[in-house]
Structure formats: structure tokens, C-alpha cells
Image (cartoon, rainbow, N blue to C red):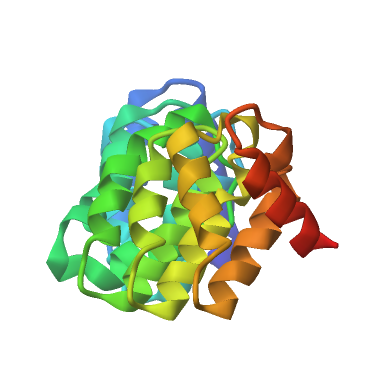
Length: 242
């Protein structure tokens, strides 16, 4: 009876959240049992409990679930791990970043990064930046683009994203270059002098889409108010915005 099983899963989640280790172990076992028909319900139950940090066994089982052929199930597992990592769970962050470092798991890496772009950024997620940088440096353009999007999402919580965005902003690939430039939107007052210098140079770029993206960034974060922006760049940006 599925309703009975769902209720039992809910009870297990409640016990696990209360710190009962046997409940953690049972949830992990259910997640790893591909014959269990309610694996997605287990993940959704975990997702519905924001205060539940997850034991190591559950976190590792969620990491394995990200490889599942059921894309919805794998995506939900990614969401739960992102939420756990955002709440400073180091094992969850490790599970999230592993696919980003593994060339054989690029489909999983893409899904993780795409899911990350849909979630709220927290300082704890800044720990994923080095692994995202590895994905950005791959030879897989769709993975590079979504990595740049994820870096832009994390820009408010990590200054380490900016040199990575600068590098991608010089790419020969139009989509990646534009995505990286727009990644500066959320840098705000944390924008570094090096990033400002890079963005200033884009105002003179021969490509119209690059100049357009740069102008949008200037308008979004008000670069002309920063003390380390040259008067010439200020004037060019204001003229372009007008």
C-alpha cells in the first residue's frame, strides 16, 4: 500500500531529523534500493525538512542518486544536497563537487550546476567555486556555459569567481563569453579593481554583443560610482546607457 509506505517514510524522516541514527541508516538504504518504488518520495521528504542536515550515509546515498537515470529524481537529490551544503554540511558539498571533477560524469555535473543556478547562494556554497572552475575549464561548451552561470550566481558570496569570469569572458565562444560577462551582474560593491579594468576594456570591444553586455553590467551595478573606475570609462558607460 503506497500511502502506508509514504507515511512510514515520513515517520522515518521525522526520526532522522530528531537524531535517531537507525532512521538515517534506513533512509539511506531505501535511497540505494533501486527496486523500492518510492525513492523519489524519500528524496521529497528530505527536501521538505529544511532543518534536517542528513547523516553521512544519507548524504552519500543522495550523491549516488544524482547518477540515477530518472532525471527528476536526480535533480531533486541535487536540490537536497545543495540545501544541505548551503547549511554548512561539508559531506554534502563534497558529494556535489565530485561530479564536477570527473570527466566521466559530465551529464551529472551539468545537472548539478543547472540546479545550483536555481537556488539561493550562501557563503557555505562558495566552497564549490574551485570545482566549478574545473568544469569551466573543460572542453564541453554546454558545461562551460552552465558553469559560468553558476559562478555568476555565487558572485555575491565569493570574490574567487571573478578571475574565473574574466578568463571565460575572453573565450572565443560567443555564448560562453556573453554568459561570463553577465556573470558580473551580482558582484556589486565587491567588484575588484581587476574586474573593473576588464569590464572597462569591453566597452571598446569590436563585437557589438560584448559592448552591449558590458553596458548592461555597468548599468546593473553602477560601476561609475566606484573610486577605481577611470573617468573615461565612466563617461563612456554613461553615454552608452543614455
